Amino acid sequence: MSYLENVVIPFIGTIQLTDVLDVAIVAVIIYHIMKFIRRTRAMQLLKGVGILLVVMYVSEWLQLNVINFILLNTMQVGVTALLIVFQPELRRALEHMGRSKLSGILSFEEPKSVADLVDEVCIAMASCAKTKTGALIVFERKSGLSDILTGGTVLNAEVSSEVLENIFVPNTPLHDGAVIIRNEKIYMAATVLPLSSNKNLSKEFGTRHRAALGISELSDCVSLVVSEETGKISAMINGDMIRNLSISSLSQLLNKVLSTESEEKTGPSKFFNFKGRAKA
Image (cartoon, rainbow, N blue to C red; front, side):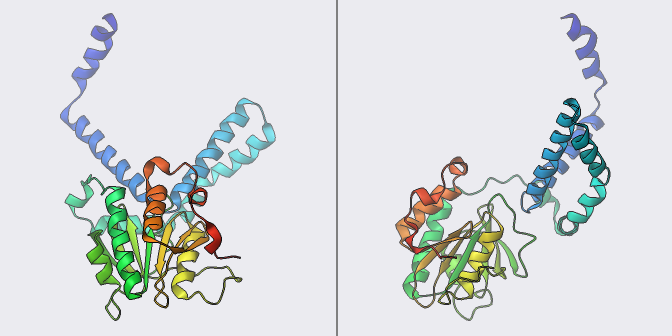
């Protein structure tokens, strides 16, 4: 009680409305910075920097002088190095800030459930497979894709089977390229992806399959392809290709991989036969 009367209560009495507003603005800025960083591969780089900082303080505590000297001198130029490494992300962040409306900045909208998302995507993939309509869909996960993608049209649309089917209709403006699903929404369409660097990939695979495999080699995304020649569905994860998926198998795979609860559990290789995997 003495502590409350002498310290806490007098401190609370000094708090003004401007202090609350100041803290709230800083909290919103930090939230959106972290939200933006999660969309790019910068998050992995920041984790690496954090590990180096921990190692530096531990080495100082354990008196590992050589390691501490190297890390300490490395960190002295760390700020300049970070500005150089994160230059594309910083530019995109400023551009995004300039384009954003106040309502978008203050938005804390809840995403669509994974099950509903998977259902809509599977319906669209089934329709494309039936009509042998070529399709390429990429699910962004922990590793952001903003610094990998080229071109495309931003949609920010709700995921629905009708929208996805319409995008891939031949000879329409957005059919040629990939659809990017970010935060349970159709973020972008007609996006160009990097092709796979696997030189031993079979020549039977066209540009769609090579692009889907290429993006999966560079990030932890999940990419889906419908072949316009055969109508068969393939999925690419971590540089591996799972071919000839049925709709039920595709649904199980997506629910397993995209579910928040299972991200750290065993991957899909435990649940699916990889006989159709593209061999290096």
